[in-house]
Image (cartoon, rainbow, N blue to C red):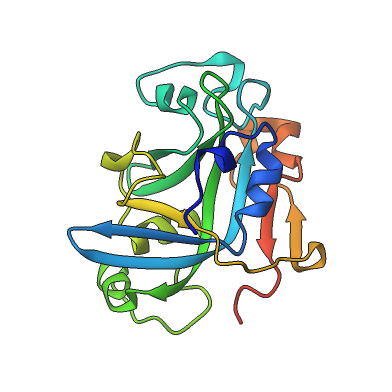
Length: 194
């Protein structure tokens, strides 16, 4: 079942980040369907979070999409190379977001291999936000797109993820955020390689 607006519009970005684990993200670009089970996420809590692009109510051309309704794609370029895909959450003008950090490919693997430039051999193929977005074909041009349509969407396939199957830890690669980098806002399926 495709996740609807109500899933994304909730106020707790960490709850949403945890609950996205075990869900399936789909992309359909030009008839090329790919999908992966979400195995790792990272939450960003908007204006109070130094690690967030919207910290202190920062609004730029790039970050304005973070202030959209929950269920919107926020994609930005990191180091001029990696397209990083985020899921905007909460309601309009509250810029929470969840970074997709990893997926386990389940559909369209040949297409993913072509995009990534290597053969899928299991764990590591699409771990990391840049690799996950690349495998799914998500780019900056998709920023602002609704996640309730038929191009990028997330489905709940009824998989139950128990609390003891989730590893929680600090976020990665954001030393500029000081103590906020240490917030336990990164969530990872402990059995993601299975």
